[in-house]
Length: 197
Ligand SMILES: [Zn+2]
Ligand SMILES: [Zn+2]
View 1 (tube, rainbow, N blue to C red):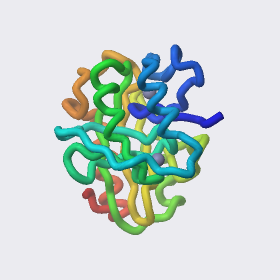
View 2 (tube, rainbow, N blue to C red):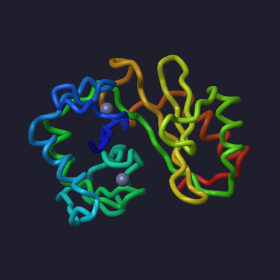
View 3 (spheres, helix red, strand yellow):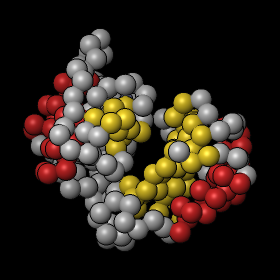
């Protein structure tokens, strides 16, 4: 059975669609569940290119590999890791799938760094744990807000900030960045010499 991840927060989805994402309190509609299963397929055929006629915005994760997805051009959402197109999932998610806890901020940084430097940095600032499914993923939590650093490709990382307690910030993403974000962004720049993209 294929493991699927939540497109809003990247947690593992429960195999029961009535449960869906536990962290976000987000059950899956039969339609979205079908679409996710179709996307997973047998792994041999990549999903066809898809796009929507508006700019998507916000932060999304690939349901197949939990990697941060990017919007290389407005309306086209694509996984950085496995390169699957995810745009066709967005409407359903935005309209019918409220998610309790949201990513409020994300930014990509580029430069030379080692995993060791990154883990040391997170140990100093927020504490560190290597993520269960990927050792190039580090994170820690302060006051219910979680900060994570995800290695995207050689020389690129994404700093991701999530709300862990619902109601702490307004639902609209990126409207309020917690103070830890600028602190971490500053350390990434000044200590590791990474440039924000
Ligand atoms: Zn979720
Ligand atoms: Zn992927």
